[in-house]
Length: 167
Image (cartoon, rainbow, N blue to C red; front, side):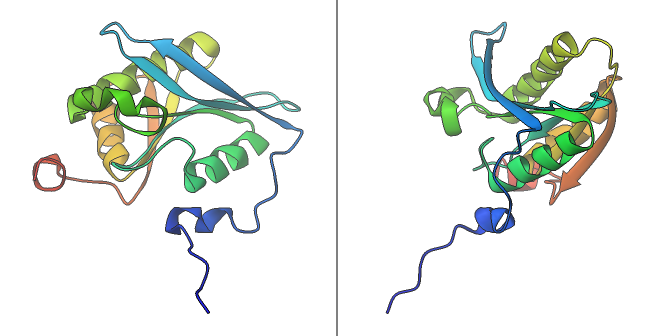
């Protein structure tokens, strides 16, 4: 008898409750100055004030609908943190933009996503960036150059694009 296939990234969702009626998730999209369209999910609490905002950046083969990002975003919303999870070019809802995908485009997408969060939540000056693998490398670079990034939370970050991405 064959065992059921399990997607490793979905393990974190086992036992997780469905979306609470106290959390709202909205699919968003916006155009970038270079003609790309960033797509993602904006997650926010409905029953408590928003006190912080966060941007989630996925790994090289990830997507914004990944289990870990979804679970963490919803848990953040429960404590008053609104978040935006985006797909990078060539991934998820943006597979048609594969030729645009590079560390530079990831960085631009992240910066423009912070711009979007700043327009959505203008009273909150800084953004926490949560990076996963290659998204973690981008988060570290953003923290180094963008004063709007208050802190970085990384899970298994890529520390060298030369040895991990370009190779």
